Image: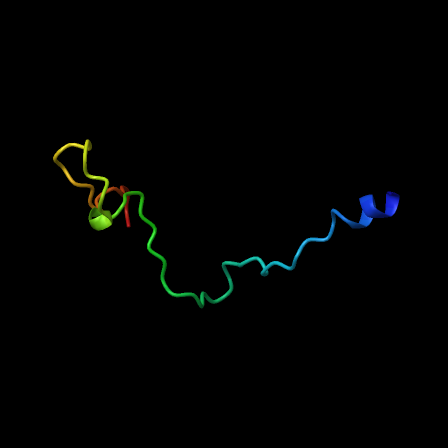
Length: 62
C-alpha cells in the first residue's frame, strides 16, 4: 500500500516548457476578444435589436 501511495499519484505526463518573454514567439497570432463575433449565429433572439460586434471594447493608450 505504501508503495502505491508514494509512486502512484506523482506520475504526471510531460508538459511543455514554460514560455519566457525573452524567447522568440513562434506561434501564429492569436485574436483575443471579450465579445463574440457578430456572425456567431443562433443567439440573437432575446438580446435586443443591437447585434454584438467585435471591437470597440478596449480602452487605454495603445
